[in-house]
Length: 92
Image (tube, rainbow, N blue to C red):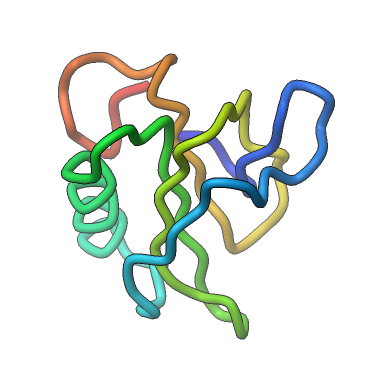
C-alpha cells in the first residue's frame, strides 16, 4: 500500500481503465481492507485505489498500467505487481 493516488510511470494520473466500486470513505483499516478485497475480485485488476474526505471518495479498481502512489493525502494505492500474494492491507 502506498500513499497517494495511483499514477503511471511518468507520474501522470491513470484515468483509463478505472472502475468505481463504491462511494464510501476509505479512511479506516476496515474500509481499506474491504476495498482491496473488492478490487481483487475484479477480473484483470492491476491495482486498487481508495479515497476519503473529498467529493470523489470511494473504492476504485485499476485495469491499466499503474506504477506507484504519488504521495498525496486522502488516497491509498495498491500496485498489484508489487504486492505479495496475500490480500492484507498491510502487506507491501
